[in-house]
Image: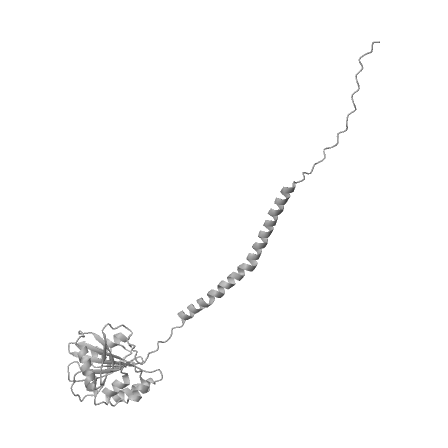
Length: 277
């Protein structure tokens, strides 16, 4: 029997389900690495915070404690200037300007004659226009103080009285010029001495002394004139002076601040003033 071609029926269409998103599950090894890295990061953060807030302040505090006293000590050393203590056998020049010519000499026994002869021997090496500083000691290397020397040369001055007014450390010099060699004496008043009373006593005793020639190296001759007021070129420094017959021999004394200056020549007096300024 002839049958027409009948199309074969198609199978029914399957209903496609929408694709379901698949979550990739990490493998076990990757999880461990991730956890280790996270732990390291967290541990690093914790250690950093401990170091910043705990260890660093502690270290800084220790450094400050260790270095603090040293800096404070340095500041104190710079700020505090101790007053030099003058020992009995230590000499301290009263000059503010250094004097290159300086010599220590022994005078024993201490008499006016030995004093003059010792200074004369030392003065021969001084060139004209120069000062030489002398440090005088006895045989025991003990400094000869101002009160001992000046009361020996001028007996009218009481040693104990002078010792109460003036420091024992004094400066002795020799000035040289064409007329000879001229001693000079510089003594410093003690802080406890009264200026007015000291000046009055010095004026009375020096100007009434009969032994002024002991201050010179050579006899200046006798004079009947009296002391006169004089000037040194400085409006603040006045002197008293006495002229002797010997050429160049003029006894001058005056006050420079709290220093008594006695010189046996006027050029020598002005040379001393230059060293005291």
